[in-house]
Image (tube, rainbow, N blue to C red; front, side, top):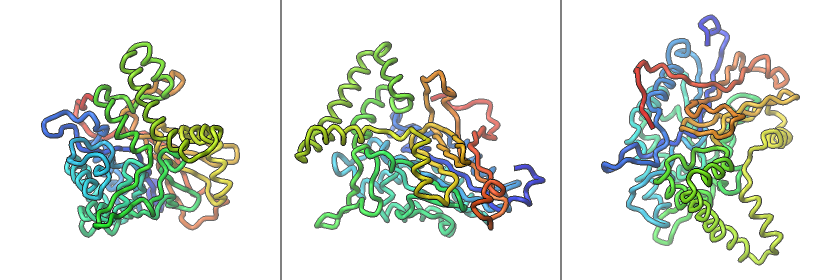
Length: 381
């Protein structure tokens, strides 16, 4: 934001997603290959930049659009099998993550401690255990009095920061990862609480995490079909093992489930196809959303880790904010920079506007954070 534009801006909304802060690069003296977030300094700079200088007196809302923390990628906790999904285990994982990224937590605290700054946290599928009230309280208590500037609630699945803009994490468009935030916790007879994860979370902890210990990039390669082709050619034994494990897991967890419901084979395979379907058809997704939400002009999601911006003929816009983790794109037709720290930026020049005048008063764009850290080196991953 240029200085001469400062007085013409009433509000700025920043949207980040899928940072996947986990238990740190080292745990108990061992390298943690499940940690995907290595941009603590860049994020600290980002928060400082948008709460000082030209932005010091401007209302800035930071929307953390899901998967900010990654409870699925915390190794070496003393909880196994179903105990991994208990409230006690979730609290232990949260404390490990927070202690591993204290610099980021303190930067968030400084951000919300300043006037006109607030945070809205939307729960995703990797930080879904925030459905426990005790985890919300543990996280928010870190911020002291500034916690009043943070909104973290099970009730938020779609957030509308300004008229015409809708923000969702995006996991709700995939059956493998969707879950009901209001009914995702069960309590045993002795009062112990457990999170009921979607089957996709089981898949991450039982398959992806296992093979990630051997190939740390296993969840970072896109498109998946290109990864399989390259893997069969250049890393045959590992790739075949990975394919067989995926097939076995899917048959045992999903095919058997549908088969035992006494459905016809046709219904079983139709259900299986929907289970495997990923939301990547931006145009049809956007059309369906705006048909049911005519007051919206912009849909912002995350989840897939693929940054994208599409503007359609009627002026509606689709944005995927991507990720702050390292990605490898094997599609030569796509931008192949694997370290792009992308975020959406919404500049509101006038808060009181009619939706017909949205384009006149609101600017929405997908940005790439370059950082302001002056160190002549960066960590090699």
